[in-house]
Length: 511
Image (cartoon, rainbow, N blue to C red; front, side, top):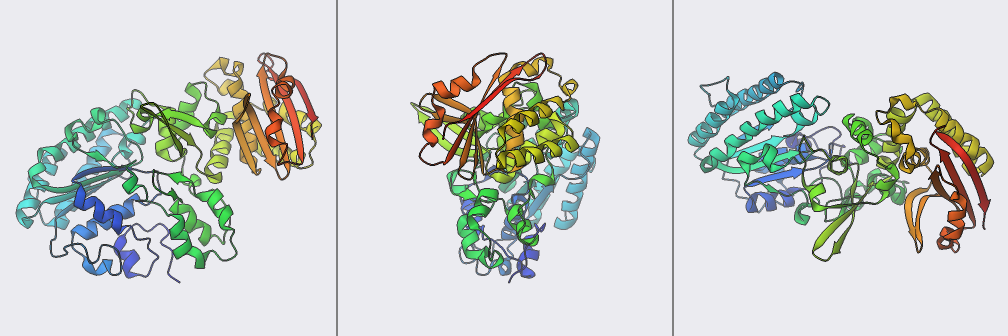
C-alpha cells in the first residue's frame, strides 16, 4: 500500500516517494483555464497548501509528476511560467515582524527565479519589481500563489491595533498585484477567513471568490468516493458509518467532505476515534467572541443566517457566527429559499467538532478541567442507568463549580441560553448517541433532547419561572418519539438567577 502523506504538503514529494494522492487536478485544470484572479477560503488543515503547491508544479511545467492524473493529457506542458510563491508563517505579532516576513519571502523568490530587486527594503516596491523582472526574463505572464493570506490578521485578533496595522500592510501589498495586471497570468490566494474586499482587497477588487462555488466544492478534503476507492485497504474492520459520523459532514455546495487530516491520523493511530483536527489548535479569540454576546451554544445545532454573514467580515465588525463557519466549526446543512432571499442553516459538521467544541468551552470558559471531568463521568453513569434523581445532584454540582467571576457580562446568568449552553456542552461533550437542541415539534421546540440507545430524555429549562415540566406535558413534546423509542423521560429544570443554581427539578417517565 502507498504511504500516507501526513503533514506533507509538497506535491513533488508525494508523487516521487509513493505517497497516496487524492487527485485534485481536475479542479486545478478548471480553475486555471477559466479564472485569472481567484480566492479560496477553507478551514485549517484541509489541504489548501498542497493544492497551491500542485498549481505551482503545473505552471512550472513539471509534467512527469502528473502521470495518470486527470490533467496529464490536457495541459500544454511546453508552456512554463515564472511562479512567485508567498506564504505567511512564524512570528507575525507585530507590523515589523510582518514586514520582515514579506521581505524574506520575496528574497527567496528572487533567488529561485534568478531576479534581483533593487529596492530590498520596501516590500511593495520589491514585489512590483519582482513581477516585472520575472515577466521580462521568462517572457511569460507571472503566476502569483499566496498561502494563508490572512494569518497576520487572524494571529492578532486579541490585539486589534496590531491586527489593523497588519491589515493595512497587506492591503497595500496585495494592491501591487492589480497595478501589474499586464504582467500577470494567474493569481490564487488561500486562507481561513474571508475579509471584506473593502478592508483588504480594495486594490484587488477584480478577485473572484470560489469558496462557495459548487464547481469547486470538492477542491479540498476527501469525498465518500475517495474513501471507497482509495482508503478502504487502510480501513479494514472499521465501521464506515461511524467514520462518517466522526469526520464527514463539511459541505461547500457540492459533495459532503471529510476532513483529510482526521482520516490520515485516524488510520495512523490504529483506527482510534479522536479529536485530531480540533486538537491542532482552536483560536482563543473565539471564546472572547462567544462571551461578548448572549449566545446559546445549543442554537448552533441549527443556526440560520443570510448570505452576508457567510461572505465576509472586517476587524471592526467581527461576527461570531461568521468566524465559526469560516474556521470550520460550523458548516452548511441546508439552504432554504424564502421568496427572493436565501437562508443557510448551519450546524456542527460532525461528532468530532461538536464534542470538541463543547469540551473546549467547558475547559476554557465555564469550569476548570478537573471538575469538568469528574462531573462528566458521573453524568455519563447516571444517564446510562438511568438515575434521574442523581442527575439533579450532578447538575447542582455542575453549576456550583462555575467561576462566575470569569464572566465580563455579570448579567449572563439571567438568560436561559447561558444555562442551556452549559448543560448542552456537558451532554454533547460526554459522547452520547445524539444530543439535539431546539428539536422542532408541532407545538414548539424542545430545549434539549438526549438519545441513548432506545431511550430519549426531553429537557426543558426556565430561569426565574415555574412550569418547565408542565410545558413539556402541555405541548406534548414527547409524542414525536413514541413510535421509535422504548423509554421516554421528561425532565423540567428551573434555575434561580440569584443563587445561580437549580431552584426546582422534576421528572417523570411517560413510556
